[in-house]
Length: 222
Image (cartoon, rainbow, N blue to C red; front, top):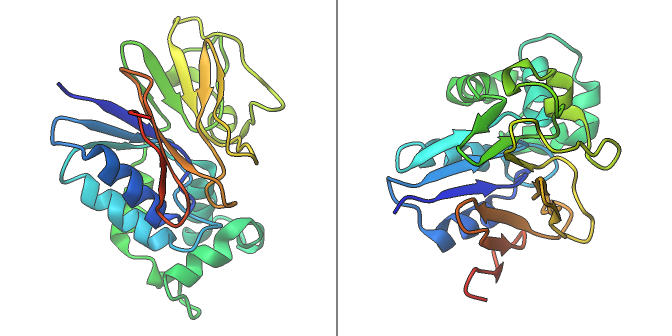
């Protein structure tokens, strides 16, 4: 039986990502959906993107775009100056690539990967976006500012008109708690800040959690 696992904001925490993936040991029939924010703040953004590219070859990976990937690409493509991005974790990201003054240190494979990331994914029972949604709009009509930037802490949406449950990230809980109401679950559990990375199985509601060092602190059988 195939499974669908959604993984929260990774932010350069490669050890935690590996721990979660190894814990549920995905097969080629399983789907992994990552909610975005793979880069910035944590220590190994390059390694996280390398790992996601590997996962594309072993299971069905759907890597959504987060606002941090959006900021990164704006700088890499010369659309904005780097100062704002650097203040929000870009320094750690460029350090992971060995940046010494040349943005070419970010390989084309990573740029292409980010450029083709979708903004949402939908199943029969759930939809997954990085940040937030407008409950009265179809997913393909959602403003990008809401999908990538709007925190649920300041703008908690009502149930989506589709009747499907939302899975989101972006709004981290500093205590590492999963936020859950009947129509929505937020799985950004502040891994880069010393809490956990969370994996959530859509079919069962099972949770896996790892600390930044890769120590598994929660698994379904607990």
